[in-house]
Image 1: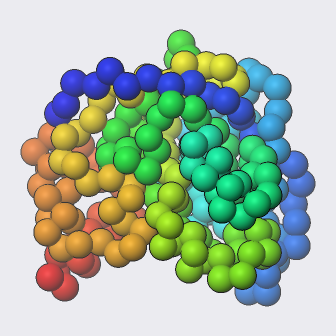
Image 2: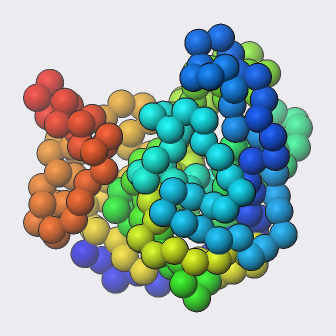
Length: 221
């Protein structure tokens, strides 16, 4: 476990604006990727933000992916790279942050937001066909993966309200050094063994999806 003093803030809070047609083969042929900023406070519950929706909970929802956070700094990088505005919610994120290294967040890292909310980093966002359709950029899935600025999915440890302008405090970091950025390009067996061992030693619960990936990588290695 590592003592942490990193702080930032929430720059915007977004929820689903409306369901859109999804690429063929996606559950129910609808997608809730169209997130747009809303005035706060917005209540965060165990499965995400009030007023939000997740159509395909297997891949984009559930407790381990209740909240998706993306950094202003990474959005600004993409804006310069693509020569277009990356407005809050465009990537389907719920929270935009400023001053927090989201890609560098360790799996299991915890963020306190405002007076009540506590979130835990679980895994990176993996780009998919729906995301590519929304962006309409050539080779988007490949480019997004190679650039490795994925943002982080989070689970909710303590519920409560969140608003733009709220302070974000990194209050816990496991110290294993395995970040969300380690996963998008493929899990390394040594890293995954280290991750599993660290969670076991600390008595923490590794998200089932990440544990499956980690154990598979260890067996392969």
